[in-house]
Image 1 (tube, each protein chain N blue to C red):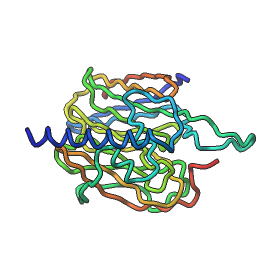
Image 2: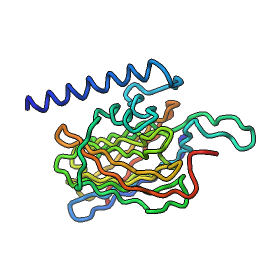
Image 3: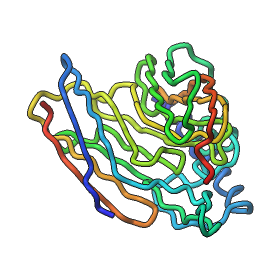
Length: 155
Length: 104
């Protein structure tokens, strides 16, 4: 119980530091909801996005299965399915590594929700699609490459 | 912007398979209008929550990286046929929408 608490506190402190760093420059202000994790979503690279999620150095895991096409003809609509076989999965985040803002979504699971999320994301170019899973206060990750022939982030 | 949202929830064994299709343009704010060359203002769903019989089962934060008319699928263990699924979303302009369905 105490160990878990310490982890939670550590995560909160990390996220706070990133929020300050983001506020200091770079980003144009947009109207944000109070609860929405702005620092993570507006991060311009994978490292910052992960820090915003409080998962700066997740461990690689073979228990996370990412189902996505090897080649996506249309980057505007790339179906992605993440299944986490890790017991006690509490959240799944999906990151398209080379997008302008890599984090596409962070899904918090509660009640009896299983470690499974299916969605569709935009991809600007060929890159890794990374899933970051939080389970029992620790974070795990896995990635799969998706080749994009027509990007979906431009006009 | 409150266009209809579609939810389908079916039981497969003891797991409810919930599929949600939302209607939303999901503009990132980085795209330019092909005709005017002006940036299209950001307009995307930020928060999606789902409850079954009043208990939260999914609280998602999403960004402009999710495709237009977002699709979301998730699986919940425990509910029984006839339970009520409610899905709410809020976008960056403060628009909201809500829909409900019965697990069948």
